[in-house]
Amino acid sequence: MKLSEKEIEEIADNLECGMKCYYNLKTGAIRTIINFDSFGGGDEEPWEEDIKEIEDNWRDYFEFEGFESRESFRIMAGFAEEVDDKKLRQKLFDALDRRKPFQNFKWEIDNSGEYRQKWFDYKRMRFIQHVKEQIDLKNQGLSEK
Image (cartoon, rainbow, N blue to C red; front, side):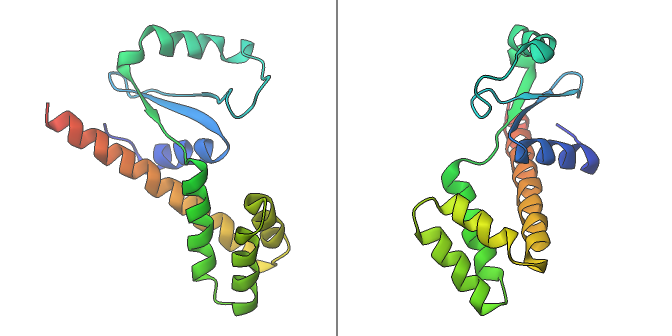
């Protein structure tokens, strides 16, 4: 499986938005569809063609996985550890320790000035790394066969 940096970034961006991304191992085509688990009640009609293609040829596709909640939590904690503003760092850790940590963390980040963009850059970098790790694991599995 060989993807360009641009394709990797596209997959990472779509996963970050809560979409599902599939890579056709035979053609190299990337298909992105809405994640109905995340967007309950979504209309399937715009995605019918892609869904049918993936279901009919599922052996040809590799599905890229997004982060589970606990992994997302670790990413937020990792970012908080790197924040050089001690006051903000403590606010972020406090947010993660309270009920509704995702909501609290988002509120603190949204009100953190320059750190808001730093958070977005950090999170995007982590998604790109995650996609690359999945490619490496898949390629190792393919070379063993």
